[in-house]
Structure formats: C-alpha cells, structure tokens
Amino acid sequence: MSGTAEREIVISRTIDAPRELVFEAFTEVRHLSQWWGPDGFTTTTRSFEFRAGGEWVFVMHGPDGTDYSEWIAWTEIVPPQRIALVHGERRGDPNAFESILTFTSEGMATRIEMRTVFPTKAARDQAVEKYHAIEGGQQTLGNLAAYVTGRVREAGES
Image 1 (cartoon, rainbow, N blue to C red):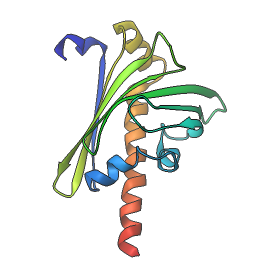
Image 2 (image 1 turned 180 degrees about the vertical axis):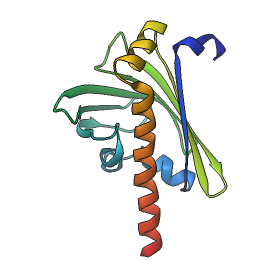
Image 3 (image 1 turned 90 degrees about the vertical axis):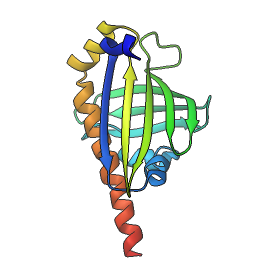
C-alpha cells in the first residue's frame, strides 16, 4: 500500500479487552450506537446489515446540532480479524473512502488499526484539515475502548 501513503490516514489503539469482544462491538447496531463517532457525537441508525455487501445508513449528530448523513458498505468481514468497508455520505458518493480495520491479539488485549485510503490526496487533506479526521478517528477508537472495557468490567462483576 506504499503507493497510497499520501492518501492515507492510519490510526491505531491497544484496547484492554479480548479481540473477539472488540470485534463484536462492530457487529451489532446496539453496540455501535453506544460508541461510534468522535467525542460529543451521537448516532441514529436508519438501516443496518452487518455482512459483506450489507450497508449501514445512519446520521451522526454533532455536539453543535449539525447532522451528518453517513453510509457504510461492508466489503469484507473476517471474524475476528478484519473488516473492510467503504464510507461516504451516501451510496455512490464520489468522495467515499475505503477503510480496513485489523484486530490483533496482544495477550489479553487487542490492537486495532484503522487504515483509511481516500480517493485523492486533496480529499485526504480536506478530511484532516476541515473535518479533523485524525483527532476524530482517535476519539472514536477511544470511545470504542471505553465501551468495550466497560463491558469487560461489567462481565467481571456479574
């Protein structure tokens, strides 16, 4: 993927939870709606089908009240190792980007890497500068970590 470096954003995080649980947080909308998005954002799902070829149509509500229409198509799912997807504002969005999420066990923890490739360097730069994509991605993985580790703690207390 070295030919795509100028169009990429790569974000990773180690989460103190088993890989299967971290992966599971992506498989059901009841999980995703609890953590998806940067800090202060909430999500309303319009439709959701987690399978290769399936789609997730949703609206992200920003802390300032702005709504962002979003669309994800899952292109590959290899439980519990990898998820590939296309993400845009809608089906057919010419500015849609591709992301590959990998889940790697590190003892009892999981390292998740989110590699996003934009159609052009200009689209990547706009996502970074205008939409704060790097900070937003880091916050999203932070929200995932808080959600999943909270579930681990709850399971330990039961």
